Amino acid sequence: MDEEDDYRDDDHVRAVAVRSARSVRIKATWAAWDAISGHLLTILSATARLENVNPDETDEPLRSRMHDECDRWASQVEESTR
Image 1 (tube, rainbow, N blue to C red):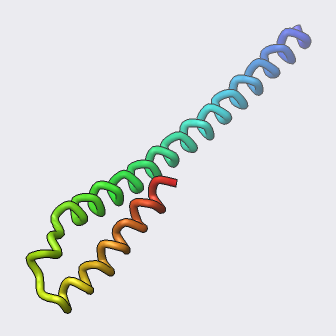
Image 2: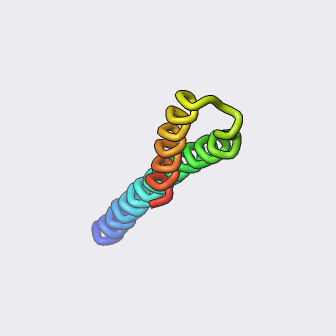
């Protein structure tokens, strides 16, 4: 009877370890999805801003500032797609 109890205890320990490992993998997957979602939102917002800029319709001081902003947004897209 003692051997059977030991066997059941070992099964229980293995089952707990498997559940714990699975939980860690699930948490890592959700963290990765959160990171991807953040990058995707950055890409979408930066590309939308880039699409809406028309430097031909602005005066020179604003055009140079917009050019700097467009460069910044483009670098955000580049960084988020690595």
